Length: 88
Image 1 (cartoon, rainbow, N blue to C red):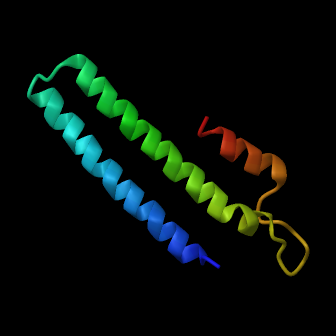
Image 2 (spheres, rainbow, N blue to C red):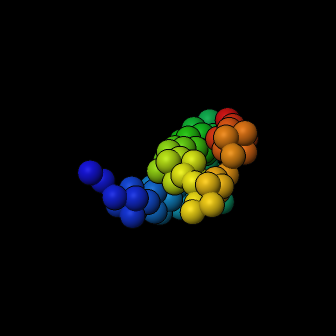
């Protein structure tokens, strides 16, 4: 079974990759590269960020819905749904 820390390490790797992609987009703009190429790379970075966000939510989904010792959830289902949809 994959531990939460291992799954979040994957998110960190994804975000580091996105950081490199964004740096590449900045360089492309500074170099006056073709608009279509810049937008294509920017869209790829955007999708990668979305995937990282979804991975964080899916990793924490069970934890967010767990109850504490008093039977209170850390986050209710409606709040979790809003959080999930904020990435849409």
